[in-house]
Image (cartoon, rainbow, N blue to C red; front, side, top):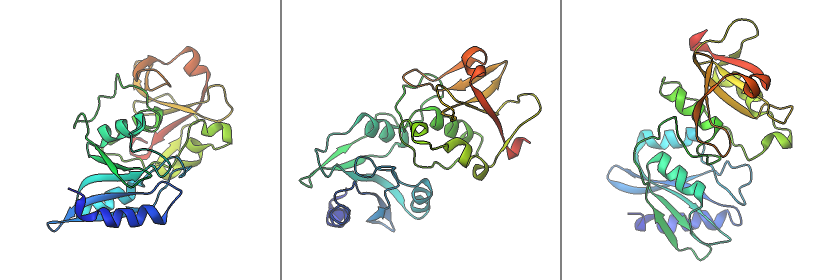
Length: 235
């Protein structure tokens, strides 16, 4: 399906060596087209990230049939994260290796995973993405910012620095309401975990290396709470 645009893809990957390059393959007006994208990953030498705004922009004018990225220093074998995000988006991935050959991986499921019982895969299924998916079901779309593992150890206060621009407001006084986002700082002075209040003193969250679940909002989670956020729709 992508053979007609492979030369365009390789031109793009060569131009960005030694960083990982990325892009989208889509059908527009009956023809296959390659859309080169900017790699927004925190460390593009070992990872890639496509801006959701760019993804949506392409999807509005064409039908996306593939996501492209390369491993400029290695093989085309997909990482666990590659497989997880491929499954999440429901679109085939094409991974190019250092020799400019590629491997295609197909999504193993075409539906979105349930919010409860997800395996933890940082960057695809974690405490931020479950918030994204929860609010998407409410037709509230939360833009992601590039983030890497243990961002808080590097002094990046990503939750606090970005909640206002995503339509959330800090609640200083007042009781918890359903859909409130609870920011927690676990083993850190910076908020590095989050959950959604779902009523009955329970939160929906996805802790590292555990399945996503509803959990009692007491003990460690309440002790580590730093902020309560409410989306403007529910003020």
